[in-house]
Amino acid sequence: MDIAIKRVARVRYGLGQPPKLSSDGIPILRATNVFRGSIVPEGLIFAALKDLPLDRAPLLQEGEILVVRSGAYAGDSALVTPEWAGSAPGYDLRLTPERMDPRFLAYCLLSTQIIHQIDVARSRAAQPHLNAEELGEVTVPWPALEEQRRITDFLDGEVARIEKMESLQRNVLVKLDERDRAFLDLDLDRLGSRHGVIPLRRAIRRIEQGSSPLCDNIPASEDEWGVLKVSSVKHGRFWPEENKRLPAELMPERRYEIKAGDLLVTRANTPLLVGAAAVVPEVREKLMLCDKIFRIDVVAQLDRQFIVLASRGTRIRDLCGAASHGTSQSMSNLKTEEIKEWPIPNAGLSEQREVVKRVKEQQAMTGSLRSRIGRQLKLLAERKQALITAAVTGRIDVTTARGIEG
Image (cartoon, rainbow, N blue to C red):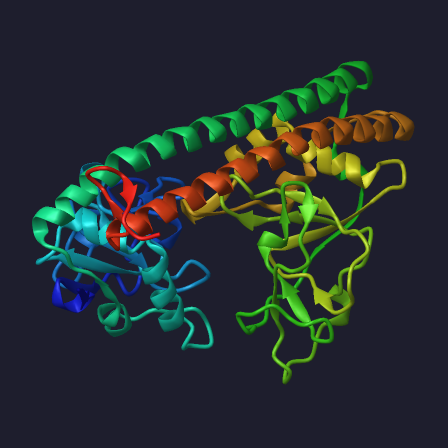
């Protein structure tokens, strides 16, 4: 028997607008903190208790469920565990189970059938969006309470085993990142010791930032103008698909059009990504620089890919973290003068390019390992979802873990 969520749980909204933020206090759980059934701490923002509208958005209680309301991950969900009880709900939906075991409902929301229903509901708007009424109409399995608990006890054990394997694989990815950073730092330090370092400003001929008109929240097609998002520059690479379509009634500012060979540096982003740099490869026409990205022209004696490598080294990353300014912990800003002070090894062009080549070869090797680990993680995620789906829909007997159907 299936039943609508609104008949077994209260469906409410979280905070409509973020309150005044502070450096500590009550954590606010937003869409970025909800990931495939878990609450993750990265990018947490905080507010003082007195600044929260508790009358309309009470603090979360253990056993409630957060559901992402809008954006690419609309419909993703996570159970509020003891360590997150007392947090504030961000721009999300919250479920308060009343006639169903909270763990069982949380697992249902991660099953294939329910995710499909949510996908249909969230796709009715131009942008992925889910409201309380739509979520309340989603139907979920409704076995007896004793059976719900038996299923969740089984899944708790099985999912924990799968997640332990996932954690081990992710730890390997962290080690690979550390290895790449150490390899890069060693080369940069060696060059710095041999030739000294210079501030980047001594090599800059021109620096500019673009424009950010109000755009449509979808990528531009090949024949349309698009304005780059800060996410177009990350991890040393340029991602042209990360753009927003410029409305047809607005005139593009052609002087900000991106060209192959441009050196781009983000001046605003999350603390981990602010100051990211990339060189634009061959690229489609009609992409504009936004006001949160710098385009930097440097002298011919400095290889642009070498600057990108230097920007990923520990020394500059630490400087970005220390110098970034912002009103919240989710977004930081760099000033032009701070980027101009980046220390760059004063090596000759041939040595710069030799280091670029050597580091790329090293990263190609670790990249191959990352791809393999990524495939393993995908298989584990598929296994977990298949197991959850089979258990909550009664296709396996959880007392024996044998299939009942087929």
